Amino acid sequence: MASSILTEREKEIFGYLISDYTTRDISRRLGISEKTVRNHISNVIQKLGASSRSGAVIELIKLNEFSI
Image (cartoon, rainbow, N blue to C red; front, side):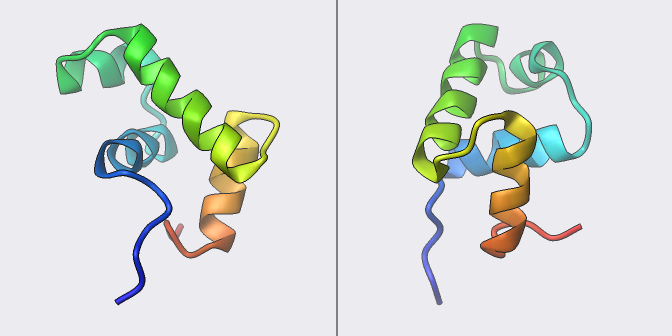
């Protein structure tokens, strides 16, 4: 089984983003601060060399991290 380039938390957060949750929704749902959510999102964007959240989502789909 191939390992993910995302941590479990990053995958969880991007799963919510793909489901159209806001940063605030995600932070409340996970019991973490909005800043922590944004930090996880920024880390993923940087890992992928993407320029935005939507660009990161597209890359993750290309890498078979998520399907739509």
